[in-house]
Amino acid sequence: MELLGEFRQKIGIYILERKGSRSKRKVHYSNIESIKKIGIVWDASNNDEFSILTKFHNKMNEKNVKVKIIGYYAGKELPNNLTAIKFFSCIRQPELDFFYKPVSSVEAATFIKTRFDVLIDINFDKKFPLYYVSTLSTANFKVGLWDSRTSNPIFDLMIELKKPVRIDNYLDHVMHYLEMIKSESPEIVEK
Image (tube, rainbow, N blue to C red):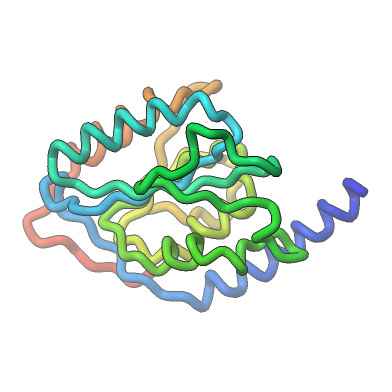
């Protein structure tokens, strides 16, 4: 059964790479003050991390920056602390097609089409449904964890941290590097 799952996922990756190569987006980022919307892609299998994301959301909210989080949860029942939260939506197993793409998820489709100023990928274990969302996202600037195994990086800024990576430390690094980048007139690159 596992062999069939790996084969299905490889086909899903192939389909995604073809679709991703055809989609175009304009990459630009000028400075931290220009950020109004942040999208976060998160592996919700570690439920304890949600409190860190909530603190990050509240901190950004104080700065008038909207944060939207989309997660992937493989279990059948979503944990109680992840339900009925306005800034969080979740992709679940029944919303995936045969190749593990979240094609029947309205939340995933909406998230992909939303033009976030910055997308922060917290999908350290490379769960395919989240990788799908990050790849096709129309965000202006994408930030992710450095991975030497990736031959076609989808991120505009990659951060390398020692493993195991804690998301609070990762978010601190992301914000630190975003603060360092300053450009008077942001160069718009079509990617």
